[in-house]
Length: 325
Image 1 (cartoon, one colour):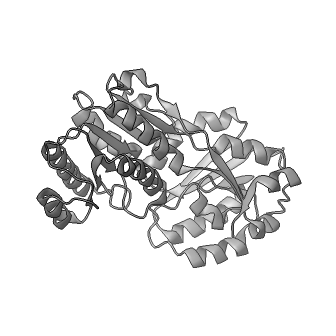
Image 2: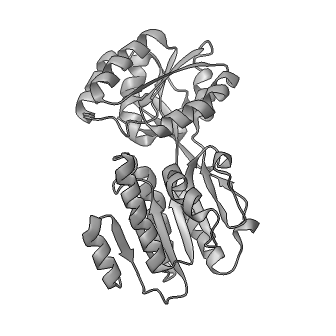
Image 3: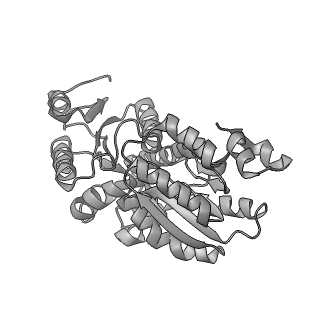
């Protein structure tokens, strides 16, 4: 932090979720406001924001950022209070550009407050498609997050050609509900019959995991993001004891509980946003910037769980895999 204004001091005292980097008073020419849907410590949103911050700091761009905390505390009253704080920041700070990460910030902030406005907006971390939000517009563009589920399924099908029934065991969140609507026809197009089991707490997750191992040909574990009382140590031991079927994930933080997966590289989103932000600050119009999609991915392999499931990756796959336990 190179400069702190009275505004920033007040905001930090207000809720602990507003932070300043190179923050300048409202007269500065080039300023950026970054609205993060989640909370500090969420790796999928922390890494893109860090990439943006690194570049903005390097270029001496004034910026502040704020957290909606909409995943950990999704209660609408709390989110609306943090949204009000965000709008107050925009009104005071008068940014030249707004950056938002993930779907909640688009849904709660961009659509009702900035979609018809004049401030350029960049989004990242929006899952699969931005068309349901009516984006892009002449002053809004961004980069989509395409989770490499299809790549993972294609890889596993070479080892399990008869797999048909897939159980998706995930948290009971609005994001997962949206994924169901979007992904159900895709799974069927990939030759799989999907069944979703969504749970809100860890005990129910364990019960659902046992059921999935009885019914499914393959189990997909997207996230544990909003599952209450999650016990990482117990979950590792529980999965090691009870795994019977092939399992995969597309998030690296779920690899202790899955045998294999391709995962995105979150920093890629931030690097694209950072460069695009500089382009816009230097005069380029968002309408001339097509919506992008992430392209980078990494393969992970859990040897212990693979052995339990009888999964023996071939040499060419092992060569690109990072080990995870």
